[in-house]
Length: 513
Image 1 (cartoon, rainbow, N blue to C red):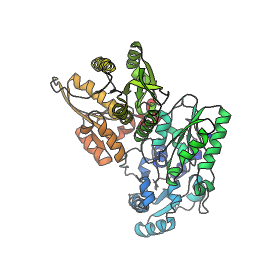
Image 2: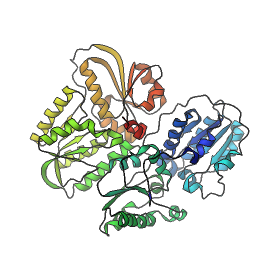
Image 3: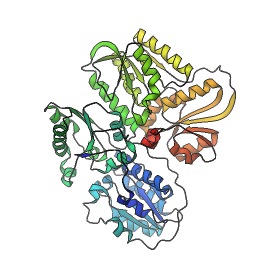
Image 4: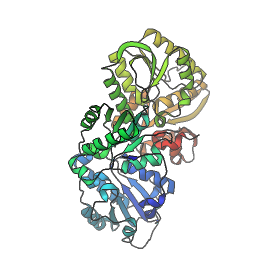
């Protein structure tokens, strides 16, 4: 097992830094979210986003064989961008596993566009390919530099992946998180998608035979050795694109560890969904499993659902509510950090990721819930009143959303919020009560599953979903002032922008204060 920790790699280690020194090279990447987000982060740091394009695919695209046509079309479009002389297709593990016809891609696209298209093998699987060249040798196959790419990318930032999100959420004392990956997926976490205070995150050392015969045995042996060495009591095994694609039996690994008196769980992430969906599914899985052994007598415990630093920000933002609950005599536990023994008296949902679990518990265990991120004295006062009502009644749901239409309107500026649905509803509610009449709420949806989650949030049926640049342009044209993550500021040139960091987009950089 090797450690994953928050740290910046030296750019000298990364092939892309050599390719992007040329102004006529366009890099195209496909694969799961970490494959493309890793390059997006690097391009953003180097100021070369105009020389990068990604292909948004699903696990099913690789399984059903539609990925190759989608990749081919993306490469063709990249080759036709003015100033491009070379297109580098930066291969992911799945591109190699499904054995795309790389030579055919290169030859046909060159004939069609007159632009050199080259496939660059990378990562642990790429190293096994006989066609693989190191970055410097690969560069020597390029023609002399000629041309400059100036056309800006029209793609939104890829989000933090489901696996990274689950690792950020799951921080139980005495447990390790093991990202089951051939190593590539860990780079994105180290660079941006885990906080600096998180410890005990690992990934296994795998070899070629693991991709043929399965990753189960290697994961079992190395996890067992890790737990013996570290004296930790439990482990979260977190799936990624490769184990999902080859059909890894994560439960067999869990059973093997449990037979040795360790606690273990397998989170079946596939790398093609974002952290919002990943944490939502993990919390739902956890509360369903816990329901079988939770003591049904409700104790003076309030459970926080949907919290992780990347999804919900600093815990200090919740302090007023946490202090109030403790003053009432209630213990407060965070679902990803402490295990409940009894059915909680109340669930406080602080991000959209916790809604599915809360509503399942509401239906099956009659656990009341409040879905709210209050901002301002009025909202906090209402929240405290509603909390006391729910604790008294022992059932029901309360949620914070804009509902009073009789408040006098003083300002006509068009205010656009883009971010985590529960959080931006709280901020929008505060401005609404100050008299702002024109408010619009938007959120990024990487998949149809994430869009469904957004729609489940308070006021979700009114949200404007951003799937691509054309959706964002419509919002930009409407807005006067935009509250959003700083990574989105470049898309709103000429507009007044207000920083509202969202770790789903900017990772740990948005948490710095």
